[in-house]
Length: 617
Image 1: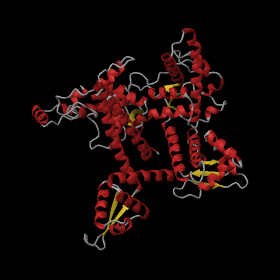
Image 2: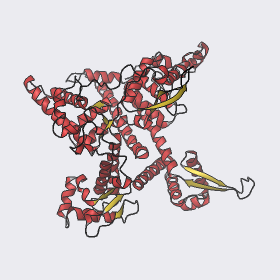
Image 3: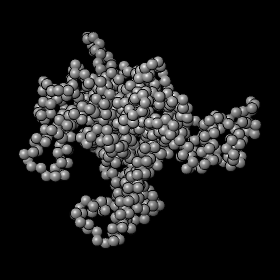
Image 4: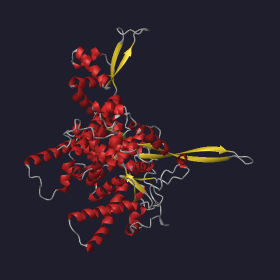
């Protein structure tokens, strides 16, 4: 399976970091860097690490200077040091930088990598303008302005690349296959224009249909026209529901910007359009469809991207619904589905594009999220009972219709019963309408539900790493606040000596705090009072860092397995309809290889779902 029998260290040639990777290693930064390398390659990873190493943003000249001065200075080592390191068998990826990553990237490749990061919204562009006054002889003072463009990386956005398949599967369940293909194409492209997104999706659908079954040339044109309409309808629904959002254009930089250097030789998005706002080389059929019917409200010059916040809100609604169903479904029927529907309604109120639902708005000047800033917290999270059935599953609505009182009354009764529950608190009634249950307003306690879910995850992590008694100690401290070790030992029903050892282990791993109180003016250790405390924020951050570290190690293990077993992947691609592996031992090794990759994928998915709850909710 491996071809490294003659190599003492089979990990020597496996490179997963760039010369500018974070040292000391920040787990979230390391994970983001690994995701960038996995999806875009080592050069883009090097530019991303250069941006991560500087806070507050960097100019293009600063990025290039940082890469040239710090990234490849390690290549100028003496022959004596290389010999010592070679004899000590310490060939890490940092040492083999020049051999693995090649020569330092050129300024053109750095610009291209930066453009890729901007295209996928990993890097944000900020414009900083400085004013200065110049005076000349026999002339008045002249005020001039100089603009500098700063590039700042979004680490949280770089971590979500492995979640793209979950977004596609969720849209497939919510809408249809066409919407899933559209979302997948937009995730691959990063940012696309309206006509471009529709055209690329139609081509992808056409390619899949040709692969499934051969079609004649006479039927392709008609089917392609119907595909355009279906894709355009899916695009409009996604834009209305907030799954895709409009972003501003990245304009071409001038020659005098960024301290005298040209940022990009060409604009990120071309604007060679006619008077109607459409490009000359775009699909005329799609352009004509955008001018008729409900599609004319779509902005003609808009640039779109996937709204990942909306997907996270929907995923949070589903998981919190599962939590409520687990806790209260045995006594309050359909409680989990009702809470999930209320959270989906709040997400729709926050990200829904109301401008596309009105035909009186100007398509060229409408912006999807322009009115979000004017929406207050109450209008997003407070809801009336009559708006819930729209987001409930059809089976739940049918079951509620069969009960006495109908859908609205049964939802109202369930919400009122949920207001009486306190472990955890789920719903709060904020406005009462006597005699009109459909007009009563409620609010889901999202923060408390998320805190309860995070506490359960942290409790399980402490249980797995330190044992049952340690997890019990964390629960006692969370409920009672600061306590002495003797009190903790009595409450946890554990010997004082063992309790003190567990407290030290938890303190060492940043799960609990230690607070010292002096009884006098002098610092006397024997007379001090030691109080142990629990901080929810600190424990959640520690657990999230540990999950990031575990997920990064899991991804590195899979990448190494793929690199070592690349021959199996090549043979699988080149295999015919019949199995070419006649040897039974060969078949067994192949099955073990694919089974190992599947197990690593499942473990990575579970860790990423845990990380979503700890960091992104």
